[in-house]
Image (cartoon, rainbow, N blue to C red; front, side, top):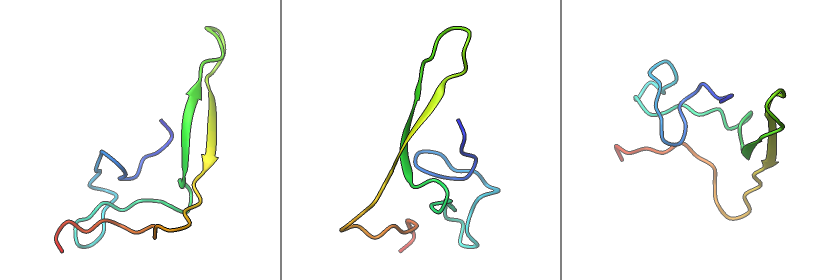
Length: 65
């Protein structure tokens, strides 16, 4: 709900590399999250947990290589 760039299962043309690959914003969105229901008359609460990879290099996928 709070992301606009290309990531995961969706692609947006305005967020792509010159090669046409998805351009992610890992600096601002490197976390796992969920929305917590807080009642009918309240806004949901965004709960985030940072992703800290130890053995995997975070990189943009290249499906052409």
